[in-house]
Image 1 (cartoon, helix red, strand yellow):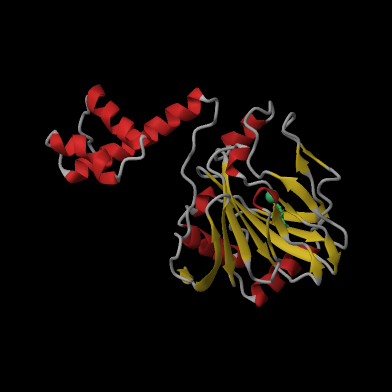
Image 2 (cartoon, protein in one colour):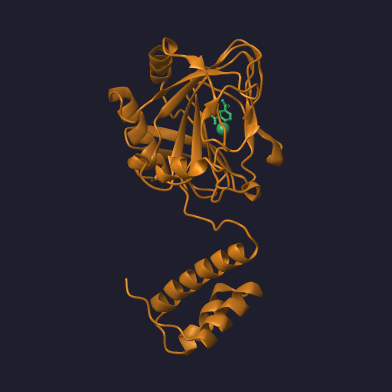
Length: 283
Ligand code: PD2
Ligand code: ZN
């Protein structure tokens, strides 16, 4: 779409009004008074605010925000159609951005994923951001395995469903990781994005850019413990078979408040499937 050229003076008027907290009408007014159509003015204000936020972020040494999956708005539908399945929206938080989904997978699908993963489990590793290599670490005491995207019909169906639910391209998803936490096992609070300053990160980022969102799907209901915690929000999501927690982070920075962990399993075991979404196609 071709956008109409804006003079620096008009641009400044729009920014000043937006920064002063003006209403949408007040922010559009200088453009409308200059003879712009409403659609031209709305498009221009969107562009100006995006550029202004990016400039502000650069000036304050913050990474600029990027687009992230945004599955549901506030007070929207309680049930959404995600390709072949109806999924419930159980909770919705803006900061950190979290959506809790009910019944993303059927119980049979959960059982099938566990059986697929069981024979391939190995102690989970953590990415060393200095070297870019995976290492065993006491912060993550689960066992897990990773399936390439589209590895079989079940994964294809689940990945298609998640892509529809999040309205995010299937190709931008990493493969599914299945984790098993035995009694006492946990995943201490961490961020899922990659620290772009890490010297080993360039090769990771080359394959689809940053991670921008995560979906953790509960494949069973542990008898006690094993919630997914968000310490900055003092919030936790109970692990219930078939349900899932989605969270997004629009830049690799703690200001997203996306710090999260898997609390220790106190009784029984806990199985999850994690899907990470990248900015661009993950190869
Ligand atoms: O198992 C969890 O609840 C959990 C918590 C934090 C999983 C992950 N992170 C992850 O797979 O990144
Ligand atoms: Zn995580």
